[in-house]
Length: 321
Image 1: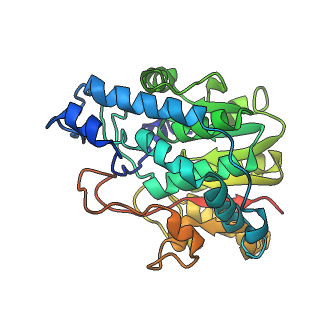
Image 2: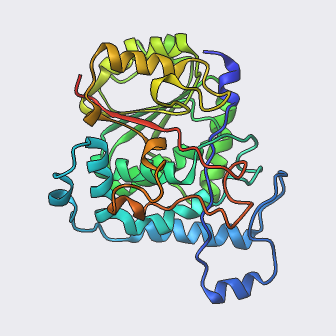
């Protein structure tokens, strides 16, 4: 794996912080939204974020109300999303507080492209499937890791295996998680090239495989051949920065999308088993009424998000091949 691959960041988007009028008064006219510089964050803002994340942990487990409705949908990923929104949609108001830190350079020194809508999809899917074993490759500074941990901690189950080439990213992420009160006890970190370590420490069975790493064609072929078989039947696989047919969304994809599309075609993977999130949001509005509850990019706030655009280049597949 190219060491430069670990330098790619995660992007996300911020959704407006729903502070009460009292909180807004206490914060006064101080800056609520971050600059692109690695400046210290206002301690009051961190306190608000910390408190909201703790409140998420204290919420009771909602009743599953989405199971019957979602059965009528053909696409399995969309089924899970509908179930997630109907059952856990109220929790999105709390995870937004992690998302609002995305452009704080003291938390995330580099920029990337993991959109706010994608982050909601990630959180809701983890809440729905309640995995026992999640593996993420190249967590970098931990933006998407935060959503994984928030969901897994809320599930009160599962272990997160994280692989990156350099431990410095993990140390930085731990400081960030600690500042906002995200429990990291479920995470196991390995400073290693996954191609060299997977025979030694990679789990034999994986419920969710989260790939956002080296986007080259060769590495994608390697992980498809070696890691996909370890995902359990019905488990979830994620890739980022990819589009249908292997069309390159931007410079991040160096052939990964083409390798995935070739796999889909060669294995004749059913259309109902995978979802390109970019296609989910391409239409205005989102084609499924229930999924319109997913929050779109808040274009009214220019400092939210990454480079003021929304691409949603996540790919999800339910393993039935």
